[in-house]
Image 1: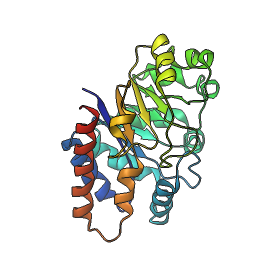
Image 2: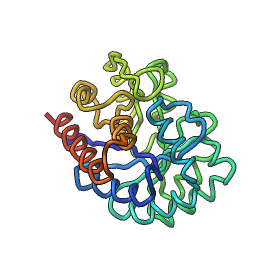
Image 3: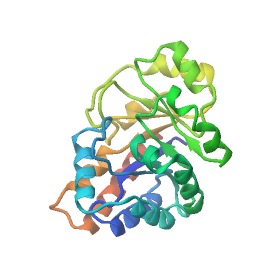
Length: 246
């Protein structure tokens, strides 16, 4: 069965909501949860996730809130922290490794940390039995794909198009999927632009999909109560999980 990874922004609209939403997504069939670490300059994210980042920061988000929520979430669903490298650098990767072990989080997704800059950190991360997720972009050459995926752990994050999340572009990913699978048996999950309408098509040839903006749009919808938001993202998760497996 193909897997569904869901991204939500930690602390928006509230920390209690984040915990409730995460547990509801687990019940709805989400296999892995990306807990987004709000950051002021989320360079890989489109306007939807950027807006949620900003609102969470305005609400007073601190890293301590991420750790607090993770303690309540990670025992119930496979959890990763998704964040930009700045906080990891300033607080220390060793600190994040220790907090991940303490809370039960399984690893990190750091989109602005390329292979060459990630290498010094990988040994300590892997020694702690955690994963640092590797990214492949449609612009990567076969030689670079080989370098990136040879030691990839947990899953490989295939970016569906060059650009930012939520843009909904479309590219033929089959040649790049072929090249990835030539050099690695690690599962390949596709992200960027995956929602209810694109999930079935995007899932072709891969082992799972990563969905962010489709969920965060609901979190930003101030016409909905928190209960309605959770009900809606659960429904979206169920629909996408069904579509990628039909």
